[in-house]
Length: 161
Ligand code: PNS
Image 1 (cartoon, rainbow, N blue to C red):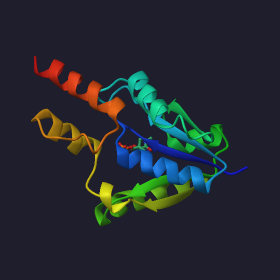
Image 2 (cartoon, rainbow, N blue to C red; image 1 turned 180 degrees about the vertical axis):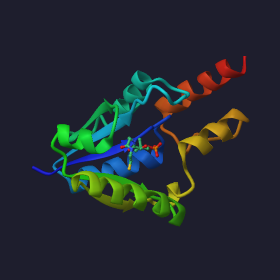
Image 3 (tube, rainbow, N blue to C red; image 1 turned 180 degrees about the horizontal axis):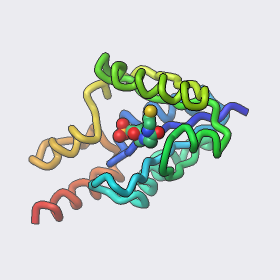
């Protein structure tokens, strides 16, 4: 049984994230989307909200589940017996950031990191940019799933008021 973890903050999940998860699900027997729930970080959406949105995004993927984790991702991989971490790469900047984490994680426990290159249609999509564009009224409807668009618009409006 080959189990992989797709970790991230997912604040909120984007169509780019879901594309990586879908492709990871085709590569591994089981995939756990692991939502970092570090309480010291300020997020637009709380842990339960981020997990619930991801659950909606993976309903059609029978070998994918969603869970929250705290602490080191390597410890979580050990806890659930995952052999690999899957990360999406959009650019060289992502690679520079991710390779350091991959090497640290391999150093800590020997867990492998598998990089999946982003589909070009999502190459410019990040949760932070989506939030920034949506804050100023830009159209992000093709960058996040419908079940994210509504809550995102509402949450940003509530923050403005
Ligand atoms: O979506 P993000 O913010 O890029 O996700 C980052 C995340 C949660 C995957 C990363 O910060 C992480 O793995 N955090 C857990 C703490 C940890 O293990 N840190 C050391 C990484 S080498």
